[in-house]
Image (cartoon, rainbow, N blue to C red; front, side, top):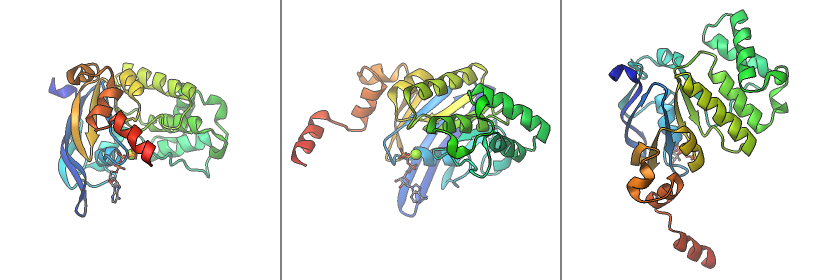
Length: 255
Ligand SMILES: Nc1ncnc2c1ncn2[C@@H]1O[C@H](COP(=O)(O)OP(=O)(O)OP(=O)(O)O)[C@@H](O)[C@H]1O
Ligand SMILES: [Mg+2]
């Protein structure tokens, strides 16, 4: 049913002067589903997400979240969203719990409620013993988990994550995956980017592969490899983006 659609992205495009960073990207995301965008460095993944969460103005196209036009009503749209950006952007003058509360206050959540929410979300991501730590005392994985917890203070229906596990160790990746799976089971929709085939196969129901700002493949994660005759997402991605192992070896020999 149409009303199951949380996010509707229609022909979005971003130009920087003559350069087209994102061209004609369209997709929909339904309640409780996860979609991953995969593509090489510079392909336009972060730009696509930024247009969706209304941080970058799109050159053309349309995005709505639960029917709310993100360009016309960015504040209202953002109330429905949790955002985990590529860079952590935590406030280093505040400790862990204060970062959570400051974010909750942005959503007009009263202080006592914000405190309660902060405590339960820090427990959810396994940081309850780190409430009073300073940001610089956290490891990279802990910072990522804190950003995830922070993105959930407004009970979002949709969370947008830009490379949620890049740079994390294997344990931290699994913690992140487990929490995202739990959120999905609660009916939260997930839009993410990732450079990892295994992560996408584990979390994403659907995948959108982009290169040079354009969609080159999309569909259910479980069906894409067979469709192109490869064994998994990573192999399919390498082939579709033009990576040829023999050529790479030759280039390395002569470089
Ligand atoms: N503010 C900007 N001004 C000009 N060009 C930009 C700007 N932001 C991004 N770009 C260009 O747009 C293209 C897409 O960038 P984007 O950050 O979306 O890539 P990405 O797919 O997220 O890459 P990565 O995997 O490295 O994070 C790049 O060529 C980048 O140089
Ligand atoms: Mg990026």
